[in-house]
Image (tube, rainbow, N blue to C red; front, side, top):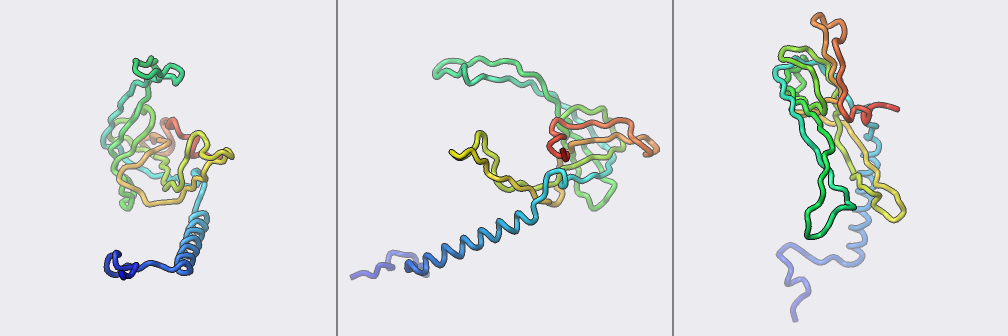
Length: 189
């Protein structure tokens, strides 16, 4: 008669019910501890923005056309109506940071700017890692949405800017301030 473990790869064994229950409890304890640690590090988005100074070295501004197709007009096997929904602008800046420890070489801005090569700017940059998942509509029958947490992270070489302030040549004030379409997501209300 063959042993029950003989079909398993070498070095792998079946766990008893007691061993399985102990392993599951240990995994649950670790998951709960990791969640508590994550919650302790989590911050609201407005606390996870940083301001940095840059010199602009290149500007690329692109506009995009948007269309919508209402769900009420979706039909199987036939074409669906598309309607013009406006335009959006995205600006990509090649930059040199004042702080040599900041690795950012590119700033992405959701909106138009009036920047030129050589301009001095101050940029507010969201710097966060997202944990959890936002679902729409709600993900459960009770209407509760999963909790999304945000923690700090290191800068990347390409970052999003939610506010760009063009500085005067003497750097004693601002010439203008541009805010992105999602600027309010990063402010305290």
